[in-house]
Every structure is written in structure tokens, then in C-alpha cells.
Image (tube, rainbow, N blue to C red; front, side, top):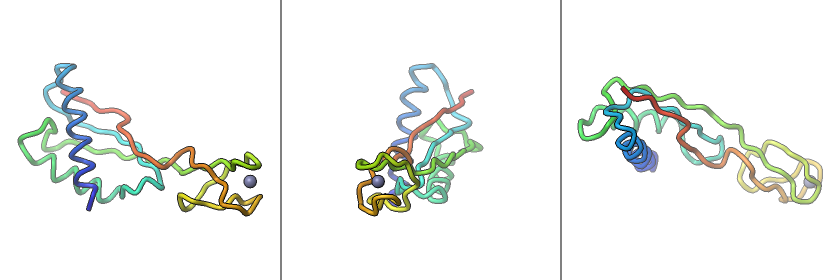
Length: 116
Ligand SMILES: [Zn+2]
């Protein structure tokens, strides 16, 4: 389950930023997860719950994780049509060619966090 490693990196990034801002603990984390990002929200939540009960990081034990899903979007490089792909390599509904270029929903990122 690579979400454990992903969440570890997220916690580390937040921790570095929190230190700079002199934030001692983090109570809430908001993530944007693309529907085709390969990160499963349930697995991320599970990983978050594992990290937050550990004492060697900045998360409080009752920290909250909010996940915003981002719909994947592709634009056809031939006709310019924008559509919602179901796989990373997808067929344009107009040209019927695998000409779609992913423009959203392929990644996940930290949207915000709240400290105390
Ligand atoms: Zn097209």
C-alpha cells in the first residue's frame, strides 16, 4: 500500500512548513486527490490515522483529514474537446483516438492545513 509512504511524505512536508511558521501541532489537513491519481482516499485516511497516533510528528491524535476529490479531465490534442477520462490513456469521444492529454485529476496535493 503506497499510500503509507505518500502520507509519510505529506506529513513531512507539512511538518517542515509548520516549523517555519512556528506552528506546534497540526489539527486539520486538507488534500485534493485526483480521481486518476492512483491514491485511494480510504487508504490515505487509514494511513493518516496511523500517523496521527504516533508521537514523533506534528499531527495531534485527534487531527482531521479532509479529502476533496478532483474530477479527472483531459483535452483532446486533435480537436480540443474537453472530457472526463476514466483511464490515464483515454479515447477522445469525438475523434475516437487515444489523443486525450490529462489536464486535471492525475495528481494529489496539500490544499491547506490548520495548526494550533
Ligand atoms: Zn478529439
